[in-house]
Image (cartoon, rainbow, N blue to C red; front, side, top):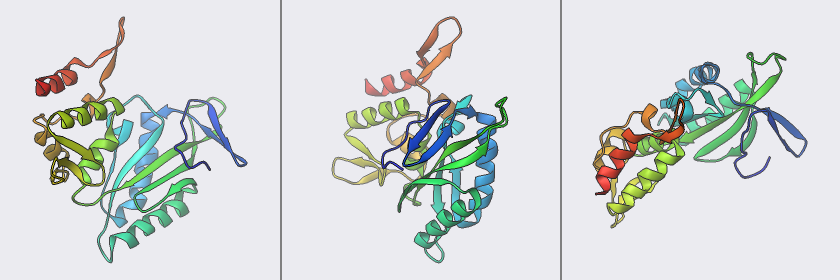
Amino acid sequence: MPSEQVPLFPDKPVVDAGYVLPLREIPREEAEGLARKILEVLQPFCERIEVAGSIRRQKATVNDIDFVVLPRAEPVSKVNWLNIIRVWRSNFDPVTEKQGNELLVGYVPHKAMYFPDNHGTHVQVDLYRATASTWGIQLLVRTGSKEHNVHFCNLALTKGMRLQYSQGLVDKDGRVVAGRTEEEVFTALGLPYIIPQEREMMLLVPGKGMCPNTLTVNRYEKQRR
């Protein structure tokens, strides 16, 4: 499989090195069912595990399922991360694209029951490994949306900070300001906690099409003044 992230589009198969993977958008309710199964299998190896991405933002349809994972520390977190990979692969028979110390990307076979032809499909599943000190920043970033992350990073820069996924919010002297919880990170930028459903920067408004999410956009604009 290619080393770069494979884009997902409805009814567009990924074809590479003999693999033909039917990848489709699926309704959030269906993705949540698969996510619950994965959570049930991986939970014993995790201090914390949470679904992020478009499921957490409660989008109507999703392209992939994102998890932020904090492996159990005993015997050591690295061993449990490897156990997570092993159990995930043995239970869900994925086609693996990436496998490393911080990230696992694979495509899980899934029976897409809502299609009239009842053909199977594959769903992309991403596991992001966090630590106790980076749990909040990882969950925030992996929840998205992409546009919300751009606003977040730009605001951090105006306040003399920058976002580093592996550490958290870092000041100009390289000191970590926040990262353990989402609430801590928002507070460090002077923002109220923004619930995942409000992290879409554009919303579909009946009769108007896609329009800016003024509630969230205004919160950022206020902090830039």
